[in-house]
Amino acid sequence: MDDFQSQLDAFSQQVEEELREGALSFPTVFDLSLRIKKLADDPDSSLNDITAAVRAEPVLAAKVIRMANTLSMNPYRGEITGLPQAIGRIGLSTLRCLAFAVAAEQVARDHRSRQMRLIATGLWMHSVDVASWACAFAHHLGRRDADAAMLAGLVLDIGQFFLLARAARYPALEGDMGRFAEAVAVWDDPVRGAILEDFGMPEVIIDACTSDPIAITAWPPVALNDVLHLATLAAETPNPFDSLLGIQNRPELRDASLGEVGASEFETLVAEARETRLELISAVSD
Image 1: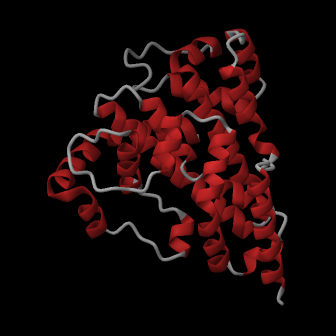
Image 2 (image 1 turned 45 degrees about the vertical axis):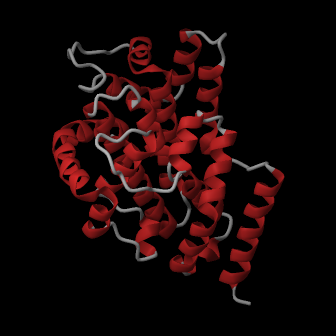
């Protein structure tokens, strides 16, 4: 048995055991997300407590202030410079989005393998792309769940981030990225579901991230998973694992998913939401 296969077997066995025992071992980079989540969920936490946790993470603090000054969050454009005011402006749900974004970005930057780091960076860029479209679409559709749409977009590929982080223990896996992508495809859904449950994500987020894409037969889209599906169709940065597996977001597949009326409305929505999406991408990724 070659090194790749033996390490792939060990990798798969470890993931399977953690899922079976209900005890996923999170990489340390996700500690920030879990810490912010606990503070946000604790009714006894004060704004001072949350601000102190965010201030201790300079990258997160900068993203919070940048997000608070986007047009979608601050339409009257009075500049926000204080962290407590910025947290109050964006809300705890968006704060959790940004905390996860920082963790995912850290996975992309810190992977020891150059090849895996490139995949992680591509996955990070794709996630930000999807999340920004989802939030922008929700805003332009007049929905009240734009923050939930952004969060759903960011965590849609959380299983793949987890598997990438776990792969650092198995360096031979980078020897055949196509076969590694096949393994990720096998474990992505169950790992995503387990992580979302462990993170205590709202049921609407879990439903949106675990629902199979369906044709949108009415406009505007009703469910959050429909908005998330539109965001995946609009994303201009491909998921690197899809690319490795030869999966492409071809126009004919998009049109078949949306139908004739939906395809036309979708193009209009994309044009209207593009500027908001670009501003959100800048706030999350800079």
